[in-house]
Image 1: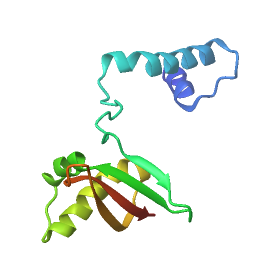
Image 2: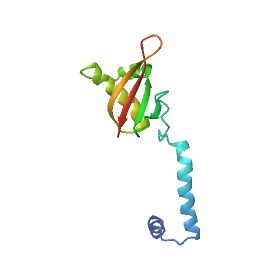
Image 3: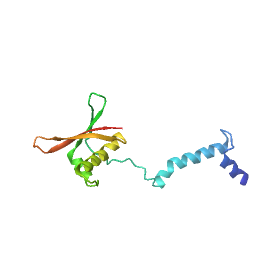
Image 4: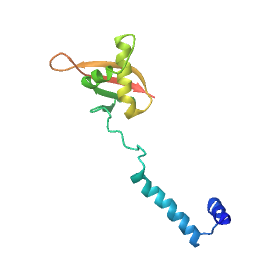
Length: 126
């Protein structure tokens, strides 16, 4: 019995043999059956920011357009010394799920028809 377990542990059986097929079957059962038994907490993250537009400014640099409402919501979770620093951190937090680790070069608030800020244009690069 010890020899059998050692052979299974070190995978010494040749392909096509009975014991090889048993090992492959056990591995496949583990792969396909355990997610129904064990909660691996492996789920997609659907909490990405909404409506971030990405465009090319013509020089090869990407410009992100972020809604002001998303920035205000993200500002609640960001701490900083100045309003500019807090806004930069909130914008970076919103853009990073899409673009990865970025450095915000500059941003520009854009006013809507009512005169209030409606979106931010953000120039960021890696």
